[in-house]
Image (cartoon, rainbow over the protein chains, first blue to last red):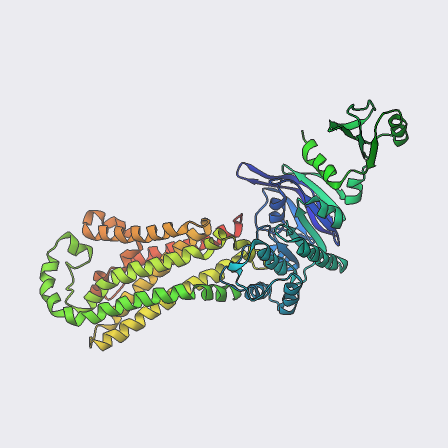
Length: 291
Length: 261
């Protein structure tokens, strides 16, 4: 079964585009990264999935349930972290976590204490006095304390320091190993490379690509950098050639033996052949597609 | 009833302050009556002959030298305006404040239906209106006994009941506005109450504007009518009840479909 399945999901805010015809499939137990530049429609997609907004057209299922008809049941089985978590200012962290649990009809006080400890969050502090990063931690605790089946996280790491980010992904990894599905949106591409099994790229409201991270990154293309030369070599099939500061770089996805034999005839001081980084791959998606 | 309890807890300071201010103003007005009674009786004739102004407050038909008339007149400002503003501000904040402060995103991503959110918040608002009116009624009874007055209990109860119903109607209308707006409701709430209040005054001043009574909920709090007939004017009250019911239904329908952005 799919944890998240959308069918031509479309949302317009009046005349403004939110997302258009998004068909997304996330398997149960997956660790899925949802990537795209600002304003691409990541948050719109997520808000549709959790029923904060209603689709203009299309439909979606979360954990096999219809997002409009079974909204309350879906919400009882997921943990959601908003990108900008806002809470009732006068409350203490512990009170807020208890209120969140009571809205779910549960007592999660033990789990809440453990999460606060692991995230280095003082549960006796008042929410209004917390920094952005600490408020984010409260949001994380709210999303995790009831041990849901599916985690929907909107830019979960923004505002968190690297140590906490590491701890957070460790927590997610543990939950994922126990069978929970993780669906997170981000524009930190290295997070996707490190933690996600599958990923999708959204741009200008449309899903460009979705698949496993390894095959998205390992397209067979190589990044070649030559130092000690300024002339772009005349090799058929090279992409994105750039010449600057006494070096030349380009992408190549043709026959590799042929590449080597062509390179051997060139004059250069140093060579570096590597797989393109995940950043290069996705920036390629961000800028090239749709133009 | 988690949300209901939470709402009451969050609003308790505001409720206590409003109750204290309104009840103490009512108490002061009542306790001043013995001092003013003599002068008032003399002034009744004068006041009754001030034309439009007298009519605006119903003084052309009722003697304010009489305790119940005096009380009803004071009420029209303190309980009508003060209580009306409390009802409006509390109800307007109920749904829209969560959206303005982005806590709706927190609340509505828990497994609670929109209908449940609306119901519990509406009940919390209505209970606060009940508590305010109960405080006012209690203070009124105590202070009336203290100054040794014995007004007609039925008439007094009807005056208080009329204002209670006014507050409920204002709360229902404001609650509906709360479902439709995203924050910024405070101005609308204050404006609405003041507008209704002044429409009623205008309607009282001149017969030509009498039709305005069909619009303003203050019409059924008219103490001249209540004291004369020992009854609330059911025509105006029926409209008030209808408006309240329609507003509450509209609030449910709107909030269930609303996009929280």
